[in-house]
Figure 1 (spheres, rainbow, N blue to C red):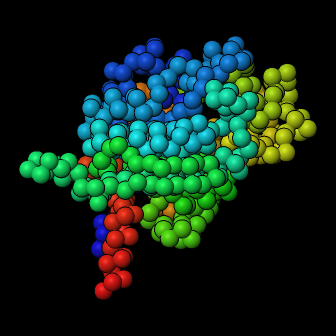
Figure 2 (spheres, rainbow, N blue to C red):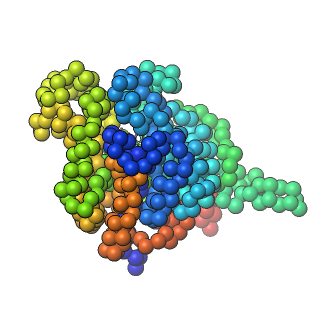
Figure 3 (cartoon, helix red, strand yellow):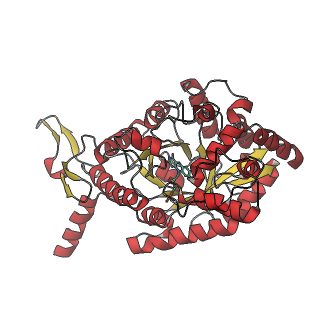
Length: 454
Ligand SMILES: Cc1cc2nc3c(=O)[nH]c(=O)nc-3n(C[C@H](O)[C@H](O)[C@H](O)COP(=O)(O)O)c2cc1C
């Protein structure tokens, strides 16, 4: 029988941390945004903690208005492009998976197929692509549009986009490069496949100019929360990030996404769902709560309002922070991030908060745990044992100190409980996560033809 499944761990690696005021309080270098040494240290620290994945989120845009707020809330305004950063980290690490976001709304499939195939080779099989459709109009304006296309249209493009990328990753068979010096033949033309694709969004007569990846194909990540997002995840994703902050909702999401897999010829084991966890770890619960409260109070009102406005998809900048948001300010539906929108609307309607209380409590989905290392390990164990996730996307309010404490105190506790691996067992990200290496569609077709002929 297979050994007891261990939980997977990913790190959302964002400069000085994910909290809007994290950069003010964090103990790391004051300006780490463009400091490769800082990122190398963080990736190596996560690797010492045996993390499966170092993940870099992205949106291809700086904010161009409301600079009074954005100059106080930094992550979108100065950051490395993910694939470039991950390529640099490939040489500085040896085991941890390297995943990053790229938007199907603004790239072309050929670019993505090529970039991530290169990352997979550079890292000897540790590359992963987070498929997003993007959730802000700033990005649209960098690419000739005034606003994002409607949600359904973005997902229709994403679906076809991923299909084409995966087909391109199968251009070369695993054994196509023969390097036959005697015959002067570099690759076997019978093992090189040109894609002819004509769909709603893309027309391509195309082949990728890089050999098949060490992982067969890089790992595909997705984090859609809408129905269309979950469909795309069930059909294509191998890692799915969930952002529910309560166990029953997370369990429902887990069962929902895995339950949809069968209709795409997949099994629940083909998908690893990671729950977003935001821990603030201290020697006592009270100390952790104090530390967190201090951070919350550092959120400048301009930043608080811009965060609420972005996810509510409605401008609240004129409102009194100490009054509730009037219900007539709530839009009918979301076009950007469905889950964040639903959560914030739910808080407005059901928790009767003032605007200030709202921005201080709203966590963009993830489960917040304020407590000791044991408290954090207990909650992780509870979610994992309940089948609400296969592991966790760790989102530290401040970095690198949050990660340092986690690696020093929580990782050994999870290992002691037998919930987490003592060391890496393989070298590729697929091996860490127990994911199959995908067979090339052409090899599969040839096999089934051979089988049919018998
Ligand atoms: C851990 C995590 C990381 C994410 N990273 C990104 C990102 O880098 N870029 C992005 O545009 N969206 C990111 N998202 C948002 C989702 O990909 C998705 O766009 C959002 O949940 C809305 O999904 P929906 O359109 O299906 O509602 C992330 C979500 C989670 C939970």
